[in-house]
Amino acid sequence: MSNQSDSLESVVIGDGVVVKGAFTVPSKAVINGVIEGDLTAEEVLIGPTGRITGRVSAKVIDVRGQLHNTIVSEKSLIVRATGKIVGKIHYSEIEIEKGGEIEGALSQGAEPAASAPTPTPAASPAPAAAAPATPAPTANQGKPASN
Image 1 (tube, rainbow, N blue to C red):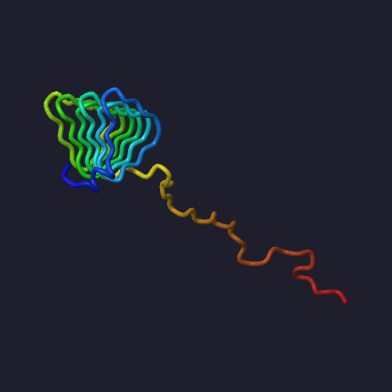
Image 2 (image 1 turned 60 degrees about the horizontal axis):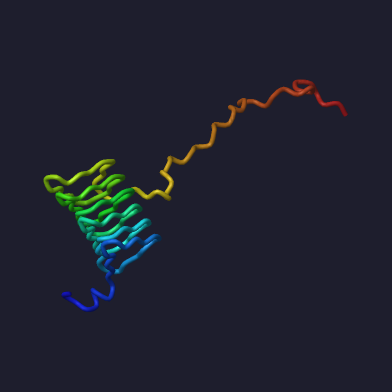
């Protein structure tokens, strides 16, 4: 390993291992087994036997195995010849090797905020009914007031 602190902040899911849940990894996640759930990391490497079913978010995602669901790559997404992605894919840069597979919706740029409502123009108040220019006639209008 290049740096001991990197290895302390990393995780390796070995071939044959199945984990379920939501995972946040400060550095690198190497997946050769199966994750059923969400994964957030700086860098994600899915090995040829790796499979993730859930939301994956990272700066760099390198896919040699399978990813299913929503994928958000802030910097680069690489789909190797043995890689397969199925789902909604948000990326900044993408590279697909010959044989790599992608099925789903691709969008370049930042992921749209799901929780933020779409801004709408402020509704202007409904125009008030036009008031007559002169006061409405009253029963005594035009007649002298009686005392």
